[in-house]
Amino acid sequence: MTVWLWLLAACGLAFLTKLSGYLVPQRLLGSPAVVRVSGCITVGLLASLVTMNAVADGQALALDSRLLALGAAVVALLLRAPFLLVVVVGATAAALGRLAGLP
Amino acid sequence: MVNVRELVRTSPATRAGLSIAVATGAYGVSFGALGTASGLGVPEVCLLSLLLFSGGSQFAFIGVLAGGGSPASAAGAATLLGLRNGVYGMQVNTLLRPRGWRRLAAAQVTIDESTAIALGQDDRAEQGRGFWTAGVGVFVLWNLMTLLGALAGDALGDPRRWGLDGAAVAAFLGLLWPRLRGREPWAIATVCAVVTVLGIPLVPPGIPILVAAAVAALVGWWGRERAPEEVAAR
Image (cartoon, rainbow over all chains, first blue to last red; front, side):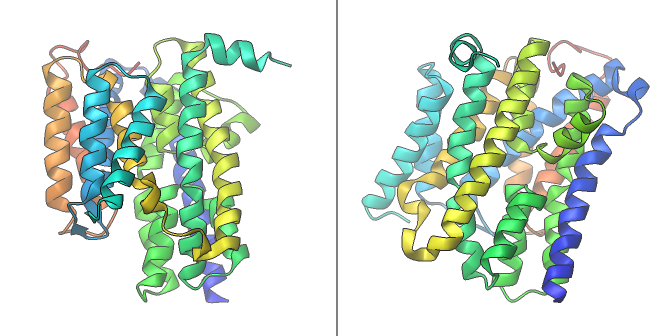
């Protein structure tokens, strides 16, 4: 029963967190400083998400086949591959790494 | 009824949204399977995907439970990991300014993927198409695949074997790449990547992302007097 209560609490908090972003007063959102700062935040968050998805294993760092995916994706992007192909290349690289016995 | 085929042909944002919906939705299988393995029932696992709907937060919730943590700490971890969605909401609101029920719907589908697709577009109409295609697309597929994964459990095998975790890395890099024009975005991305690596072992899962966001925000604030065109949000 407590699991259900906390689960619903987590769901409610998640929605309120998302909604809070939409309730920031409009006049604050158009200023050049806010636009610039949110642009920087976007780059920072995406870089952090790439890193976290590539090397994090819970609270530990793990070097595994995901790094192959990262490298393959870089090559695909340098060759100007479209987004979906980049994703497929990443998956293939990681799958091949695992097939070869890498973690 | 919008001509879907025509839209897919002419709108890069719609194509990107569908691509990431398929790539991310497929990951729902792993969440469903891992969710039931953590001790939750199929209804609870599906409810997380339906209502909480933020991949990182959902994995954090079941991860804490599977590691023996209390439901309260599971909810805490999920909430912390979801704080970035508030930032995303503000960014999407800057672009789309939804009203009424659309605002509630937009909030629910405000996640990494939908926000990133929207921010990656130059054109206002494309930003909207990208956000809604990615948001609703991921929502539908993520929930379907969660149910599938929860029902099938570990019978489907390890999704890592199919490289789906590598697909996630490639997808996030693919979203970051077009924004790395000029020296400042590269510097921010590098610093944030280093901050993340340093933070992973030191603070709970999800917090390194928030620290990186704070660092990026500080860089943006300090440099606000110069070169505003380099990293302007679009």
